[in-house]
Image (tube, rainbow, N blue to C red; front, side, top):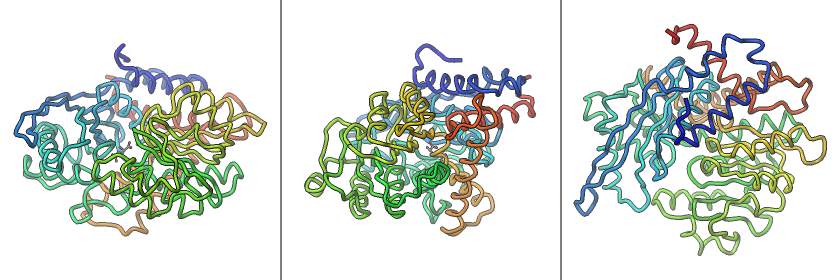
Length: 452
Ligand code: GLU
């Protein structure tokens, strides 16, 4: 299942396996054990070359991929990532997480992921458009609204989805809901850009309530990242009365000097900078009076007092040392907006501290549960496209809230049902998410004879 050259996929696979084995799942449902080696191999992997022309008229070449991991619950669904670090290991880990995340939304969507090792940083709009066109030249042969519906991820936002959608329409002569995250006038859903960040905050609201920790009002929230997920998680937390004290990018972190955190206006400046594919540091003239900049750093070790941590940048952005620093800072809740945001060692530290009776207890929610709001609203976009209608902001936001509440309760109750330890004050959400997602997919595969 796991190839020796696939460290990120191995991590995602081991994390799932360890949590399933460390529960009563296979005692209660022994027939599901045989599913694990099958579900861990993608149904299909497509790898292709992408040849495109830069602004100087030179030919450039990149590697393109689509991992069609599992379609037992619906069409393959998951984003496209354009980043120089993209390789098969990264996309297999993301695709694997996506299968179980999508199951947790309660919607009819299978799991997949794709992308390219293309770096959008420093590229012109023309270069981005030509790259998207070239990427879709091959991908358009393999996707369709009922087969595989990609969306955005790191490096792929509304602009890229527009170029990709247009290219698909021209190659295939077909206007259909084949991508999500589309523009509002051509099939997109309201709230899709906000959905991952908002959904993350809705999930944490339920954690706070269950743990009797109050609401977001008055809480100190540390956020990493500054892309779509981080921006909307921060904005929703601020709207609910929290103080957001940090944001970051791959080059460094901004941390509030005093009691005042980021304002909605400052976050909109960040949104402009990101749209122009610039570094966060380009805002330093505007930010330096209120925020300290730490080059090359992540926020976790830099803040003395934190109530809630929302890693929303990329995989493995919380190390064991970061986990310990968060606990020392008094952090009570950590919920991932990023996919596989914490290393295995960090999760181990959080899971140990979860059961601590002292003041150092912390409750950890993995990305596949806490960040499922984004793909959930993608699922709602597909539903609207099929009916050729669009729902209002309130309707979509309400549905998103319900999905996040159901996801939280599903993780919690599944954890209680299958935990080998009774009466835990804070049941393990990582176990609950993995077991609930796995059962749903495994039973669908058995029902559909995926074993013959
Ligand atoms: N890339 C997002 C994720 O990691 C969204 C995928 C989608 O909307 O299909 O879940």
